[in-house]
Image (cartoon, rainbow, N blue to C red; front, side, top):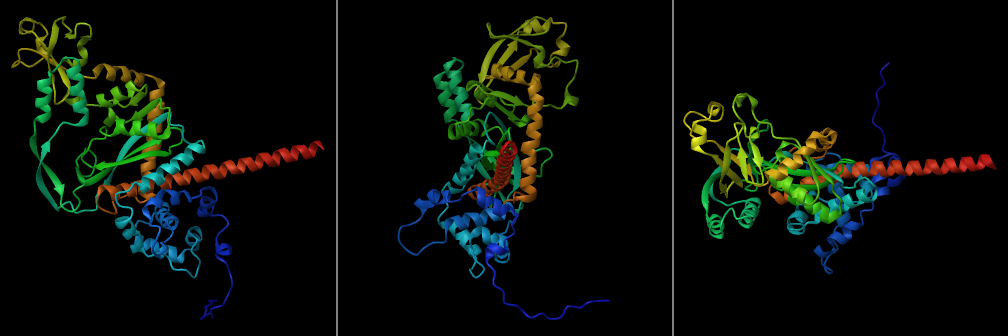
Length: 470
């Protein structure tokens, strides 16, 4: 028998929002274990002491966090969800008869008050401090990786511009080392620094801060890169750094690791990464501060390598005489230093190569000698790569896959990191930082809740034992 519900008369009932809030809810646990009043101190300098009272900044930040915690990537939709969701209202302290802050308030605060500030980074770092206090983070092992984020632009709206080609900070540093070691003169260094070549670069007309991503297995187009560092002990994200999509993964690595050591006082002993970080800069910088690297080696296309041809690794290097020795016993002497690539070049003698029985395995018939290039920090690279021969290497590579790639998977699926919501590197950085905050808060609250339960259980066990003794 079908039952049809007719029009029901609206009843008048008296309930508080506390009674309507579920007893078991993540936001209840979050409010219990995390006090967000630290936000007042972070934003105090941004507000005037006179004028009309503002909307509580803690409410604003909590609103944003709700969006990232529950994957609501539209601020208009976020306002609607908070209006009808009792749990959201309870967490924000907005009663049933109060109006939810308008979505435009968030955009206006971002544009007028928070622009040019590091407020969201400070909030992110405060949460990292809470994770350190809870014992989730020790910083002894740091794992780094990056993920692409589609820019909020049309790939068709682009233009070609000419930009000056300048040596990177690392190349400039290499030239300082080369000058110290006598590989170049002061005149050559100055001439290199002053040399300005031009190249054409594709730029988005809608978001000039983004960059073209063009990597094997990745989508082509305008993207940003979010470089995340995670603690190998718990997977907590300890640093977020955003760059255009056309920047190499290895470029900001050393600077960001040093930043975390200085900021959080980490006693970092090991770092891990994929093949994108297998560069001399990282190996050398980490060795200099006493940190071991466990980085996957770059794998070249083996199909293009002839097994019968002598490879650079078949030549032995003599550090005392600064020369290479070929498999046939001939010497390749130091020739020059390439100021652009940071490579030292070694060349064989035409006379030795002419009479060498193995010359067909060494170079083509058109060449008359063999050249070997050696990175300025090749010795440091070889020292660090020995770490890959230990069992620890496989452990760290597994952790890197679980934590780094796992974090990105969670952030993209649940915490608003699928695409850039706004334009400009500062706004995309805000998005990446808040997404990382959401993931860190979930893990932190679960840990604190579990720890509290253990404490209650231990106290109950002691009470029971004492009662039995009595």
